[in-house]
Structure formats: C-alpha cells, structure tokens
Length: 324
Ligand code: AHN
Ligand code: ZN
Image (cartoon, rainbow, N blue to C red; front, side, top):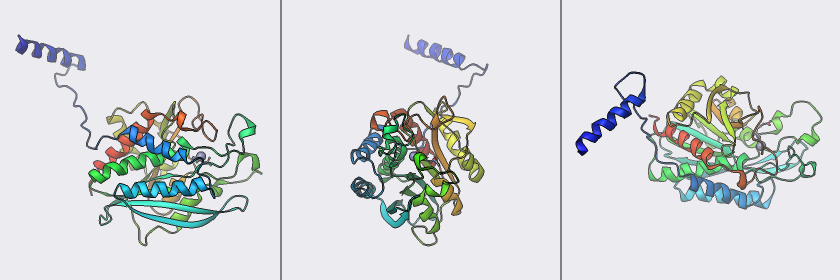
C-alpha cells in the first residue's frame, strides 16, 4: 500500500506547482549557518541594559568594553580607534570606533558596520517633555550591533571564504537636535565616528571590496527599500543582498523599490573609496523612518525578532556565498 501512496502524493504536489511543468521548482539551499535570533536579541538587550549609550556617559564607556569583549570572546581581533569629536554646539566628545576582524591574512575583505551610540535626545517624541531625554536606541544603534555579534559568534565556528571586518561606528546619532535647528545644512553634525574613520582607516593601506551598513534592523512594521546612495555607489551590492533576501523568503521585508537617500555612515565609507550600501528600515505604511525613531519608544520592548532574523540570515548568506 505505502508504495502506491507516495507516487500519488508527489503527483498532487507536482500539480500544485502550476505552470504546466512536471519539474518541481528547485528550493533554494541555504549555504550559511543558521542565524540564531534569540542570541542576537540577547545582545541587543545587553546593550540596552547599560542605559542610553550617549556620548561622554558611563553607560557609553561600559558598553564599549562589553562590545569589544564580546567580539574577542568570539575569536575576533579587536582594534579600538579613539578620537575626539566636536558636536554641533561645540561640545567635545570622546569617540571610540570598535573594529573586530576575522581572517586578517585574507586580502579579500568585506565590511559589516553599524553605529553603536544612541541618540542623546528624543527630539522626535510625540511628547515635547521628552525632547531632551536620551533614548535607549534598541533599534537605532543596538540592533545592528546585536546582529553583528551573532554573525561573529557563528564565524568563530565556521568562517566564510572572505575576511570580515565588523566596524561599530561611534557618534553617529548626535546630529543637531530638531529643537536647536537654526536652519541650514546639518549633515556634517551626524556620523562623526565614520567621518573620522573615513579620513584615517584603522590600519594603513586598508582595503575592502565592499561594505554593508546595518541601521535600524530590528523594528516592527517596517520595510527595507533600496536606499538611493547605495544604488548610486554600490548597485551590484544592493542587487546581491536583495536577491539573496528574496531567495531566502524575505521578499515581504526587502522591497524591490527605490528609496530616498539617507545621510548615514555608509556615505562616509563610500567617500573613503569603499562601495557601501545601507540596509535601513522605513515604516511599512508611511514614507518615514520607523514609528519609534528618535522617540522614547525605541526600547527593547519594540524589537521585532523576525526583522532581526531576516536581516541577519540575509547578510550571512551573502557572506557565505562570496568567493575570494
Ligand atoms: C538623518 O536623519 C540626518 N540621518 C539619519 C541617519 C540616522 C539617524 N540613522 C539612525 N539615526
Ligand atoms: Zn538615529
């Protein structure tokens, strides 16, 4: 009996593929290790537990040590790039870019990056009383680092064929607050850590074939469009990432649509001669960043594991299918 049931079932399955073909659609076989989202989520929560990682704060400095120690625990070689930065109002800040590298002898290198600081002011909060309060930055800051740490944990077990540099940029999110905006162009008040790194790479003669920036990769009710500067500077990397996302079944999140340009750390990486894209979320329904952006609601309670998983697995798949 059994031997007769199986052909009948497969005939039904074949019929359901449609298109009149007898050949079932090939299922894409994932090449990368499974991205453990619970682990990534924990790294996001760990960062948030320090409190807002705003410039010149104890939480910021303690979290820098946490991030470096985690990467080291996962077998990376870590360089702290310390520098002084100046905010829009002249305040001096102590910045630290944290660079965690794997397979340093490999000349073919890819950068995965995120900012790790959090915004000192919830200047986009619905309640004006919060506009000068610092935010947890669970999505805006910690999510990208959490995804990178989980990738690092997996790389300790099995490396891709390319060398990887994880770069945590500092002082991305202390650009001119809306409540102190006197007009004019404030774009240079953002991304201070990546501005410094772009002018002086962490090692002399540093090269990478491309970079991928992760910004706000753990929100709810959000989508990823093809960001305009990414399409301008690194269109083939955009194609690579979006096509992998779609093959893995994340086409509901990674939209095949062109988005606006965002002043973000990838612009600095591009200006330093390395093509770099930005995977940055916008609200699924409105043409704005996620609802929690620069508000007190950007906390661990609003982190979405499906979003973290989709981004983490997609980027891993890109790295583990890259040949040197
Ligand atoms: C500006 O709003 C100028 N840039 C967005 C970059 C950013 C802020 N990403 C996260 N926070
Ligand atoms: Zn921000």
